Image (cartoon, rainbow, N blue to C red):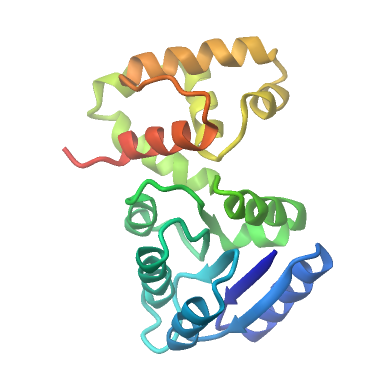
Length: 217
């Protein structure tokens, strides 16, 4: 699996390269600036891009914008964005096209090697990998004035947060120490309360939930 990595901090970039290589990823390019990232994504056509939001020369959202432009040129290009803090606007932009193959992790998660590598693989396979803190903020923002969300029970909220991270029903059941049948019932209730069509496609159902939670009214 070929990866283009963009991170301006040398020590972190080098550490990520070594970590990914240790888990059988091929590093097609490891760059430190927006222009380099844009060229690498256009010329190398990687299987997945791992991108820091803030890159030179602007140190604002250069990395994110390069990734979004690449996804417009190559729809469905898997992109995992890394950020120092939760930026809801960046999360919304990343999710806006609804095609899947996206992730948004805080850099703290990088230090959990197993979790990070799993996120890269999940995104490369067309799934989602959303940081729990991002999901929590999206849910909290919507719950105050959104009646459908207000009808969700505390347990359903737990399930919804885990769904939005990209976890399957089996993984959620294991996490919450309940049966998979119980989780299936919770997910059906969640979709009913949110007015969403039930789907067996995990990626589409997560993207639908995230799109619903994040839509402007």
